[in-house]
Image 1 (cartoon, one colour):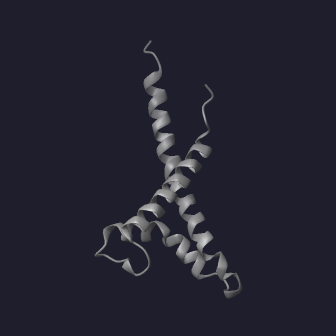
Image 2 (cartoon, rainbow, N blue to C red):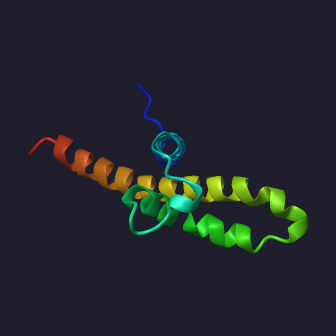
Length: 102
């Protein structure tokens, strides 16, 4: 069986996690004005999307429509980078365990 590359696996994980976060946020109503320290889930969502919010805030007014896609893509990139780190560590650990002792 062919092993999927770390990059593609991490990208898939990032997309799935961002989709899951969006669905959970919609289900629990953790959106718009409900951000803050009183709502732990929405604070986590805010922290994950903060780099995208920062980038979207600096877009010119003529490109304001790019705000939401920038936020979503930056969150996917952030989650994919975290997934690359975790997958690399797990693959190294697994490769070390599977070698027979001499």
